Image (cartoon, rainbow, N blue to C red; front, side):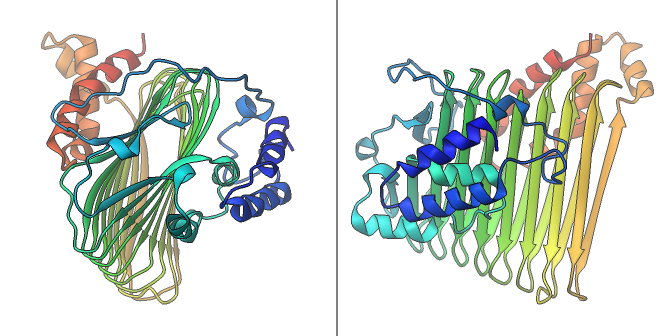
Length: 419
């Protein structure tokens, strides 16, 4: 057991609120499972030495902050700064049918709804998800009524500005035949730890357009996840864009709980020199007639390390399933490293499934072709890199988000160039 995890378990014991029974379950499992060791399949490529003996000082609650601006988006923002919700929800002008509650201020009736969702989509195998269960005191519960379509995007912002541990939670429930766009946006470079977890229940015939931007860099450590349960004929279109840091990991679970559900997930990760990023995704096809398409592409800079583990699990009763998983990686240096592990686990016999992974370097002929025509090396590398991920960037449905990402990713590429 690590010093840091021991303190987590002790701190959780003193929290007495309506989530206390679930906190106790998390505490007991953390005590039973202990600290992840190097032989653990889930963690053997992702060192946790930066956390094992971590200590945290008191934080300054009056710190100034700036919320990232996306031109043309105009979202409803729910802003957490160093784990504290700074948005006054009562001041928000919400569209009809959309309801938002702070976990810490929820009434008895809302507490019952929160309890029914909290920890029920996210699997208990996620050790830092259990940490979040045990310590999360700040979060939001978002509910969308049946037959309600909200055009205005909802953005959950997590800002890391100082050395602290931030444990936030978002619980989102879409009613039948509803439609919503949710953006999880994390930013920071302070020597902090963020465990931001989100759980989504997408009702029958409902549609969720989801984005997660994990732009933690430098000494900022993030270990979080987004977890989805799809009911009958539900639709999920999800995009992840991530940088690397001292320790950066995102877990994704997509559970097909109802027939004829469709899930599409694209992921882009860009790692500068010496950075680490780990993505673990699990797709559970528990019922027949589900469809999943997952594409993940990474560009890994000098001495950086990427880890990708993608698993599609087809249960015995999940006949007529269509599922495809692809992971492609581009190394900018011989000293860059990627560990990729796509998996199919199939127990049904009437399915169409495929998976694959590639690891490659910049094609020297293509680079020489551009250089010989007077294009600077830095610009040539940007052009080739964009070609590698352009398809996934173009697949983003939201134009303001796409236009915001393109120049930002270009600048990131330039900074990733191996000197």
